[in-house]
Amino acid sequence: MKFEAIQHIPMSQQAHGIDPNHVVFRLRAGRDDLKHCTLFYADRACRLTPVIFSSVEMQVAAQDEWFDYFQVILESPYKRICYYFELDDGTQKLLYYGDFFTDHRVDDRSKYYQLPFNHPADIAAPPAWAQDAVVYNIFPDSFATSHRFISGKPSEKEWNGQITHGKLGGNLRGVIENLDYIQELGATCIYLNPIFAAGEYHKYDLLDYHHIDPCFGTDEEFRQLVNDCHARGMRVIIDGVFNHVGWNFFAFDDVVRNGETSKYKNWFYHLQFPVERPENPETYPTYECFGYERMMPKTNTCNPEVQNYFCEVGRYWVREFDIDGWRLDVASEINDGFWRAFRQAVKEEKPECILIGEVWETAQHWLNGDIFDSTMNYDFRKHCRRFFAEQSIDAAEFDARVSNMRMRYKLPVLYAQLNLLDSHDVSRFYSLCEKDPARMQLAVLFQMTFTGIPSVFYGDERGIYGLLEAEYRHEMTWSQEPPALADFYKKAMHLRTEHPALCRGDYHTIEAGKKKGLYGYERADEKEKITVFLNNQITSADLPIMKGEILWQQGYEAESNYLAPMGFAIFVQGV
Image 1 (cartoon, rainbow, N blue to C red):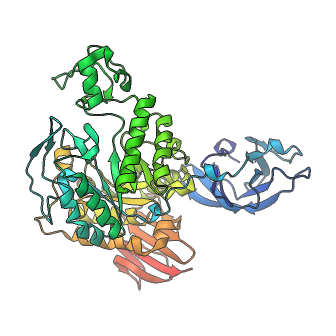
Image 2: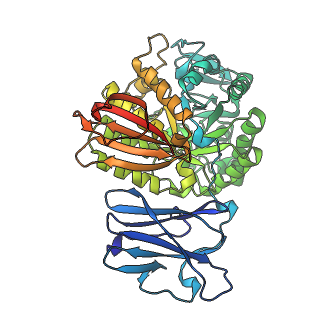
């Protein structure tokens, strides 16, 4: 038995309630080491001593390169649970509890692992609508000026004595007039990068958190956008930039003008007086910023005044405009206390409002149910890049990576992770695929059939490419004939929305060979099972004999179970 591989962490992603009557238990073991893993559980408040244990067999829910992840979703009559594991490698059986191995039980129930109370307030519960969503991410300046049109022209507007800039002519009217396009594509939710009054075209250097940037339109146009989306059954998520402000934001401007006498001096970090705005972009500023970007001073979100200001901003756009969510910029650089207060404020206005943090790294810390409902899953992009775009890892390594990714989160938030192939901050995935439609299609199909919320960056469906910022924020290609990729996106996105098993079903790997590109997996709920095979290699592959009907295929020969290079096949059957 590989003792060093075995791990269980109570009160974590390895032991958590998903509703008042169901608890997920997981145990990590060495890959292919254990023949059986059994959970023994009891009422920790039982009046009898010793307590009476029941048992349930656990199953391998995922494997990565080194580990098996055993899991069971326990329907428990107990709110307070003590538990242990019986491990069997075929030659010996041992009990595992209290982080120790033993061959016997004890009478003292406190020695076992504990779930002290499955409290509803501690359950991570993203909004129910989120796991069924397909998101279309719009960079407003680059999307549209009007119906199927973007001007490509820069603009300047005045806002309270400051100049705001647009670069390509996109605005809210352009989004409103193209909602039919977005909905027909298959999206059920739009996420807008920043739209509040700010100096630069990207709008991450905020001037005013309570109004739409005049380059993009008016507050009433935004209200119309939200209302029109809701009338179509679509949701609206907007960008919240609270880690930093623009250097002409009223509070920072007051600090520059009044120095140490400014009542806002504690709204910012590490000020050195006098505070100056350096003209040279290469000069390091004498205050904390976003990175070293001199035009974006970092806010002191530990300050109760700052916290209250931004919490009211969070409430305002939910209360007054009925938005459905916030995507939260640079979320990992802001203190937890701020985010907990922001969550409480927003959820008091609208409990079903989703909070999505921009966290590029592993995000367990923020996904325990008391901070965010979801994070931007850049790991998803990273693994897809290696497998589909670069083809630098095989199916076995790809599966290991996505399996590890699945097991690091509590089950409810796993279904709410925002799975993206690209965004306004990274190169277009189509460029990483060297503009090869076949590789792009397989990646998109995986995105639409994997666990979590798919997020499509505007124009991906039209083959926009680019490695540098000026390229990947390219204006929408309305004037060009849409490529075949657009039809593929539309079919893949509708496939997701038409089959609940792809949104809410379990995930199980069935094929992931070493030194091979054939990857197969199942998504299953109580009504149907969908099986997907992606042949990400330049050679053909033989598939097992499949039951059910073919839902969608490209390069599949049913009579011979032959799947062509870079082909795919999707099967569906009732459960």
